[in-house]
Length: 253
Ligand SMILES: [Zn+2]
Image (cartoon, rainbow, N blue to C red; front, side, top):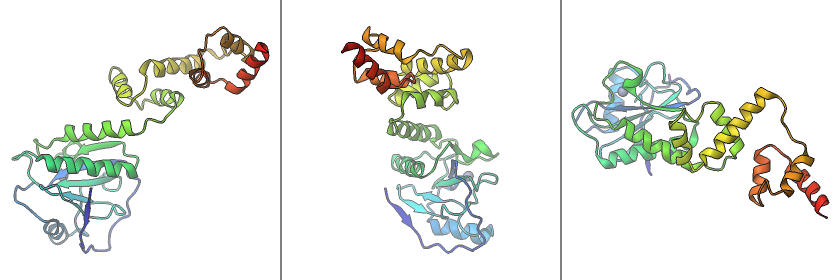
């Protein structure tokens, strides 16, 4: 993916960007082709802003231009300017539909942005304010779904404990969507849910923790399977694998 840096001149009265947590999608609202300079000059001279209000402008042919630097709050959605990155797609999607090449460019751009920030939401302008931007034909859902799935499968490496904790903290939605999301991301749903139950029950009951000695006996009885999955199971259940294995070795000697 290539982002074209244009040599736009901004006035210096820009606010610093805050903590970015979202991405807001717009359309230019006109069907005619417009260069980024045209939009920049309009925002600057007609609206009296520092310069173009969006951080990115994606043209119908899929070329991506950098607008206002991500270092500065945009001017594209009052209330969200200092917490979101604004992307504007060339076109009026109340009247036309988006080409595949433009859609793919937006998806790639979003994936790139998501690598740099902890993005919690992606929305269309009209979902936040009373506006028809981006138009009704703008493929909002398709774009959001495409980026959510890729992003989640890309970061598999977490332990069952971490994921269980995330489930408890409501980061994985509710059923049946939770199961779907976990499986899409490569996790074993039952394993995660069992761990969640263990953690939640543990919090409620207070005890039921077995001693290393008891667990060592269970290991010998075969209740914890064989390595390497035994080690993982013991650790996921919160036990000290090495300490238990030492006891097991001693008993079997
Ligand atoms: Zn808009």
